Length: 86
Image 1 (tube, rainbow, N blue to C red):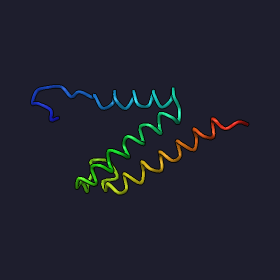
Image 2 (cartoon, one colour):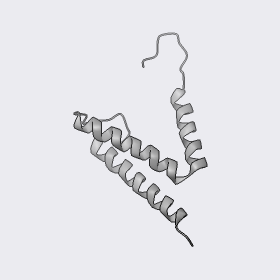
Image 3 (tube, rainbow, N blue to C red):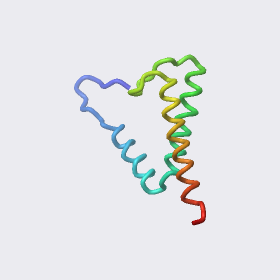
Image 4 (cartoon, rainbow, N blue to C red):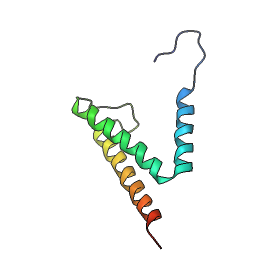
């Protein structure tokens, strides 16, 4: 969405980021795995539909997919490690 002339900037994304961070902090690696998985699925679908470049800082969708895949794998490993009896 573009900002209309004269309207103040709405930092909605910052609120969204804070909410995601709070959920990740409260629920731990399970929530990180969920969000990484959702992002991974979304970027894979977008890549298959023809998206080559993303607005993400990594730009190339292949890099974004690899990045989200690593995050998801690490989060799943952390979850399994937390559930594993000691």
